[in-house]
Length: 367
Ligand SMILES: Nc1ncnc2c1ncn2[C@@H]1O[C@H](COP(=O)(O)OP(=O)(O)OP(=O)(O)O)[C@@H](O)[C@H]1O
Ligand SMILES: [Mg+2]
Image 1 (cartoon, helix red, strand yellow):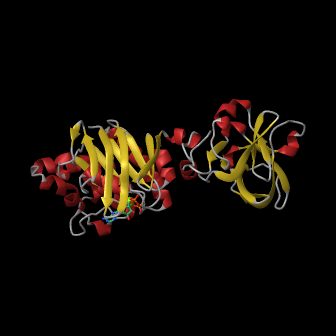
Image 2 (cartoon, protein in one colour):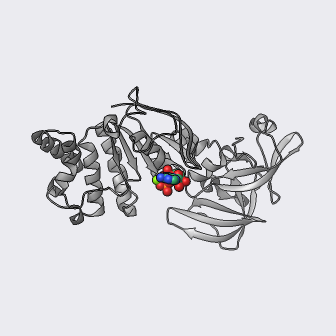
Image 3 (cartoon, protein in one colour):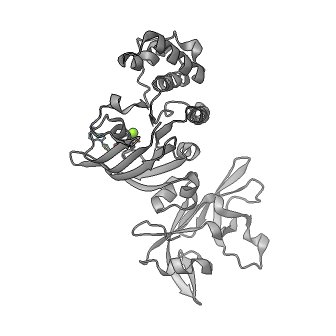
């Protein structure tokens, strides 16, 4: 197996900058997920690692070997595409053995390797079928099997689960993680689905417009997003963003949204005093309100946000509130037993350990 290092990787298609100066070190056996909205350069990055796309600048190493000039075959990687790209006229066995045949692996060895991969994936019974005789999930396994038989140094996955229905996707997510454990392989996995990224990645690389926004573990990104884009992209339902200013009163900083003020703890003073600009964005995730309506805790000096309930969505385990606060709206996720009614005026209590502030101009996180 092998590590993968991208140094200042760039790709232009004419005037379009698809990938802009990407630097990334992927450790041997690591499962790294590239995630970001459509067109942010995920597939292009993966195809450059695979050798399917020439790079416009930079250097790619796989297992300490610079591979810029090597063909895909010489890189010893296996790629699984969203479309699976199975040969429709070939049986499953031949689809899986095809890459080995191209490499002039003996018939005996091919049979052995295909059988082993089929066993790992639980598709031994399907080897005589053609792709059209398979379900989506089975086709997906065959595509995986074709990658596994090659015993590559690195697996590259481009949205391999996006053609599956929601339930199967969850199941395959878990199977892929188990497979990773079993194969002890280095994996670079592309998806636009942040849930997939959060649940599968050892580390996640968030991209936007060809630029890496942040690299970190799922919880790093969730707890300490580097900017407003990452904050809004990671986590579901998405973080609430409310434009605000900072005011100082009696030597304490406050967030002022125009509708309400939140006094900040002294522990944040140094970060806030170093912040440049006048316009900011207050961020709080729907799940980061205390599970109480402030009326219950009257007399405490907890900060409160006065809001009116527009819609209540009861999901059994939890309850979503869609709220208005003056000119702005908010989403809150509270326990199912919260006593709330539509059109009711309530006071929400933000968990002050979980609030965020971003520069409105640059989007960078202040805390
Ligand atoms: N062959 C090409 N010629 C010109 N532009 C291209 C080509 N391939 C990709 N691009 C452009 O490069 C950018 C990145 O594309 P890429 O396919 O890497 O995005 P992506 O993150 O994989 O998106 P998606 O989630 O939709 O698959 C896009 O703006 C795209 O239009
Ligand atoms: Mg893509």
